Structure formats: structure tokens, C-alpha cells
Image (tube, rainbow over all chains, first blue to last red; front, side, top):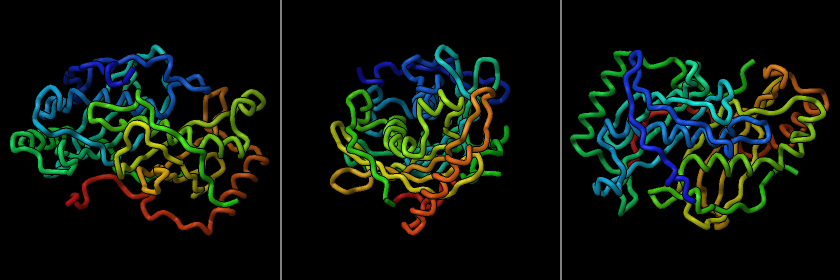
Length: 170
Length: 158
């Protein structure tokens, strides 16, 4: 079965200044031989966990809204901080870092229900014309929402791990 | 042996999303599967875990999506050692379609883990030797120019 059919429709809520998704549960088939959530499947949780942010921006599913546009991921990065296991419940924050005219950079935290951060992610999102598969400008109402959300999230504060270099430390 | 390239891997139907292409998350599966042969050659895996009670965890992972992959596409994954530290190593990967074009790049930090923590722990000498040998063997290969770059909006695609 396409994993996309399993995609939950998540809503979000503001919690302590962060826009958080409703909880998702870690599936047992996503664990690897280390007995924890495999590194690749964090991507699934971050992808599903961004739905509330995208809806808030007016970027819904192409099949539902018939806009002729969709979103592609251009660049994606995860920092793995603390393992999660099958059955754990996690929520995803959505932090808009910077909005361009055809792309935007957002950051996320995967937060265990006990409050600790399991992982962080950063994504460069591309606005794409479904027919041509080319990156095209956001429609004006989406751009307005992006600009407004960027101002709001800047005011709350962008986490200091955003944009950090990747490399062996110590 | 310097260039390390995986056997062919195929894009599975479960990985195709509403955009009609392989979903961003499953590139991680291909990259992970694609380097397992290298990890085994270094000496990691189930047996290592059982014998030494140590294992490897991903510390960081970054994917740059270059060109879409579709159902049934066949790809190969390369491994290029970049840096070795006492408890972690940094490597780059390319996912290339069998026709030769670049689908995506990967950049990873792999951590050595003492499972009793779990906590990050130094490699034993025999593993350290192999990591350093691999670094040495590959150092003449071209160093990718896309590694270590910060993420974000620089120049928007035309």
C-alpha cells in the first residue's frame, strides 16, 4: 500500500509560541536492527508533521484543491538527538525561517509527548507547477501568508541550530 | 578499491506519493540501504552489535534532491569518506540513476554508540584502522563541492 494512503490529516495548535501538529505514533515496521526508529523514517514523520503548516499557508493537497500547483522538497536535513521507539507519540513544530518568492525555508522539531526533542529538521520547499514540473512563484495569497507567518515566527525567535554547519565535532 | 558503489536498488510502489514521484523521506531508505555494504566492510552490523554491545546511529543526514525518481527507476548509491573522528565519521553519497544522471546527494554523520547508554563512544582500534584506511584510499577522489554548505535561500531557481 502506498504510504501516502496512511498519511494522517493533522491539525495544529499553538503551544508556547510554537505551531505544533497533533500527535503521530511511531510505527513498529519503522524500527531497524538497532530497535529504534530508523533514520529514514524520521523523514516520514517530518513530512506528515508539516501538514498543519502547509494548510495554514494555503498550500493544500493538489488533488484536493485543484490549484495545479504542488510542493517539492529541494533540500532536507535532520539532526538526530534522541531515539524514539515503536508506540511513542510525537508532535511536529512548524517554524518558518525565511520566505522567498518561489521557495521557503522551514524548520521543525520532532517532540516526544514527554516534552523532549527527538530530532530537528530543516527543509527548502519548492513551489512547483504540476504540469511543467518547474519551480514557479507562489500565488499572491500564499505569498501574503508566507510573509505574515515569517514575521510572526521571527518575533517568537528562530532556534539557534537552524543553519548550523554539518561535520564531525570533537 | 577506492570508489564504493552499491548494487542496483529499485524504487518501490509504496514510496510513490501524491506528486507521482518517490517521496522525499524514502530517499533516506535508499541512502541507508545503499551504504550498508560499506558499513559491513568496516565491520559494523548485527554481529558487531552482539559481540561488542556497540553500534552505529545516524547523527545527521542531509539530502539535496536534484531530479525526481519515478516508480521502477533503478539507482546505485556511492559512498565517499570525508572525515574521521574518534567517535564519528562524515561521508557523502550520490544516488545515481543507472542511466547516469544524478537523482540526489546525501551527506551523513555516523556516530559510534555504546548501547549501555546509549551514548557516543570511541571506536575500538581495529575499527579506527579501517576507517582511516578508507579515508586514505578515497582521499584522491574529487571532493564534492556541495558538502558542508548551510541550508537556506541563496539564489532562487530560475
